[in-house]
Length: 256
Image (cartoon, rainbow, N blue to C red; front, side):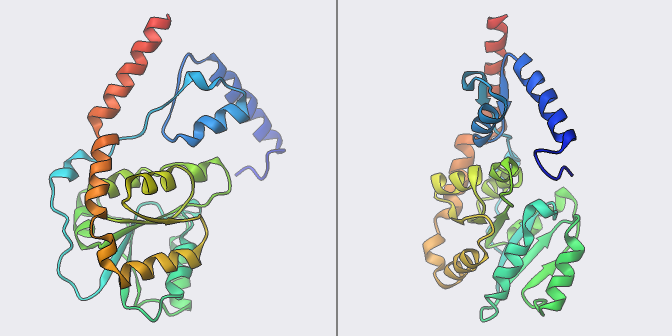
């Protein structure tokens, strides 16, 4: 990992990137904040940069993920468990909620998995946090069906912290409320869709408050699942992504 923007290797990579970007006729980015980043960091013309989001799993739209009967509310975090995912924010929030009865299900693995397991043991959070390890993609529907809401967190140390993680599209497609501690594109999607609630990246106190609100006032979030799916249909289906890509390719060919 590069330690700073003054790192010689970083400076070299930046020059190479700028050269390649400026040679392109069009650039497609998966998150809108990247447009500003590329313009400010590499001096690119915003007119040549276009928003082309990733699509999710359209098959989820036809499946029923209504929560199965269980004794406690379940919150799901699925995917890579690395440093960038800012999992400490979730665990610190759980520590503040030991007066409530709920479960956080972590499905996945990564560089921070061991740290998270140790943190939970050290702080006696095993009643509230369950680790399920890496699972096959085909087995995820089981966990989505058990989830009452999905969690999304991401560190905001650089432009990567403003992106839209790919898991968000699947969260929306399964029709679950989203609770996030994240900035940038994901914050915009949650607010614009009305599919849940979001606090700033790293705000574990705010995240604890959001989870507490969900536990204490579930009726306030009863329509979030439908709003999540509606937003997915309007923005993240495979058809819409391919149509936009073909449109950009057509634009490139006309310029030639």
